[in-house]
Every structure is written in structure tokens, then in C-alpha cells.
Image (cartoon, rainbow, N blue to C red; front, side):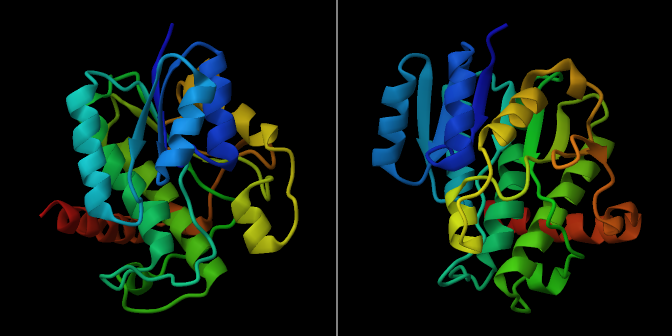
Amino acid sequence: MTKTILITGATDGLGRATALALASLGHRMIVHGRNAEKLNALAQEIGENVATVQADMSDLFQVAEMARNLKSSNNRIDVVINNAGVLKMSDPLTQEGLDLRFVVNTIAPALLSHLLLAIMPIDGRLVHLSSAAQAPVDIDAMEGQRRLNDMNAYAQSKLALTMWSQDFAVHHPDGPLSVAVNPGSRLATKMVREGFGNAGNDLNIGVDILIRAALSDEFTDASGRYFDNDSGAFAAPHGDAADLGKVARVVAAIEGQIKAALA
């Protein structure tokens, strides 16, 4: 069955490779990026049955506007793959004083998922890019009150999104499914090259697991879970995700940022 699939951060690296692979399977693709030229080039490469959406994921108002445009132009989106992410930034703060890693890696995908629920079917899927790098979330840092270095901010933002996905599943037991996926450590992406200074591992490792998470029966009952592709299995995320009080506080902080963006 042909599905409509949205991928954020689709103009480079893992997002681009996954978009091309899903398009080759016959699915209708909606590809997101910041750069219009790159988006147009990707759409031309995909060929038919593709749409593009442009927004800067570090600007939550642009994310909200993108979601509104998607709802007005689509009556259904079956799968959302929240792939867009950042690690190393020359200036890691937004105009509002928030850490860009939390905004792009955590709050933006939560906001986009929240706004697109109205056009997602019960058997739809939200696939959130997590990471093997996870660290206890400093809520003050998420709210812009404390500064973190690149790796701490990245690791915390990925655990925060994993927690949000877990909480979403609790509050939406009938669907759509929400799953957090570590696609594989240090894949051959621009983020890895800039952050770690090496070429990285085969992108197809990540492409394969994202396609499975988006489409396969293997993930039918996986809502709220975390898949670690380094071990090739569902696994427990960082121990803080088992602390329901901490999860509630992190989710409340994320929801607070969402409300502010929609005000």
C-alpha cells in the first residue's frame, strides 16, 4: 500500500538517502529542508509523487507554519520521520536565548508531531531520531537558563525526545505509533564529519532501520519504545526515562515551549 511519508532534514545525509529509498519503493514523499535549491534538486531526483516543504527547524514559528501548510495541502500523512538534527553550532543560541540543539532535536519534532496529529491515521507512525548518546536532561538548560557544550546538549536533547515519544505513547494508546530510534552510531553524515572529524559508517545501516520503523510489522507494537540499531534490538534508553517524575518534568518543559510557539 502506498503511503504518504514526511521526512524532515531530507536534503542531506541520512534523511536524503532514506527519502530516495522510500521513493524507490513507490511511496509518496514529502521532503523537508531549509535550502530551496537542495530541495528542488532532491525533488527532481525523486521524480514523481513528491512534494517539498521549506522551514528552518530552529525557528518554531516556521515549524508551526509548515505544519499548517501541510494540513491545508494534505488530507493524510501516514508516517512522519523526524530526522532533522544538529550537533555542532558556531552560535548555539536562538534569538530567544534557547539552545538550538534542544529546539531542533527535541522541541521542533514534538511541535510538528503535535500539529500533524489531525491528519494522521490511527495506524500512522511517528519515527523520532534518537541516539546512543543520551544524558540526563537539564531542564534549566532546555529552557535557556544554563549553557551546555555541544555533546552534552546533543545527548540531552536526544534523551528528551525519547522521553517525549514514550510519554506520547502513554497518552495515545490507540495510535498513531510513536517510536524513538538510534539509527546507528557515527553514520556517514555531515553532522558526524563536523562533530567527530571522520567519514563515518555506511549510511545504509540507518536507511534500513528507518524504513523498517516506518513500514514493517516488526514495529507494529513498538509505540513508546526505543530501538538501538547499534545492538539491532529494542532496548532500554538512559535510566532517566524510567523515572516517571523526571519524564513528566521534561515533557512539561517541552510542552511549555510548544505552547509559547503557538501563542
